[in-house]
Image (tube, rainbow, N blue to C red; front, side, top):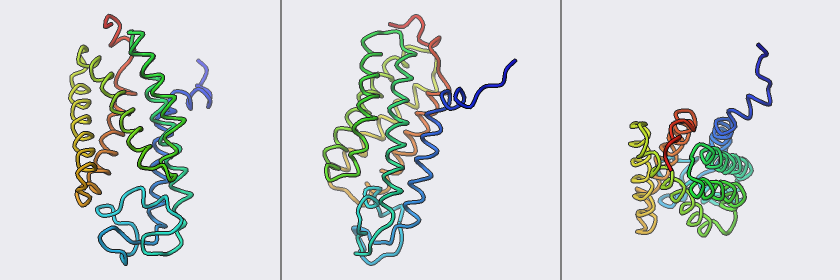
Length: 210
């Protein structure tokens, strides 16, 4: 039997590779972030409980120092956008319902093309648009998972939706102290769910579900 080629391995694990690279570049960005938070402009470095990921996108940190984190953050967001987009596109091929599959594909391509704009001055608008797309896609996926025997993934989908909605509520309410923490919680939970669905489900799970 022939060994899998590198291109085939990359294709099979594209979502995982994108997420790993995204996390690596974002982590690098946090390590070189000069400092400053909404609560203490004179703080040093990136505080995971007080800084927002968006703080990494500015050419100057909140403390006024020139920031070298921006380029690493942009690359990290680019890989995150690509990974999430590929996830929705690949999941669409598992679901037999044509309408749902089409919606997930559109969400996937839109995510790849538009999410990178989060690092621009359109940040607030794109965050709202991106969150809506992700929630819509996850809602479609959840509806079909509820019809399968994948009980752990059902719970994971519902839990992720609940956490995501709570985080958006904090964003709208302006509860920035807790929001800074929940932003990372939401990101981690969504990453685990994406990978769980990617590797824990197949087209056969949805074979007779329309």
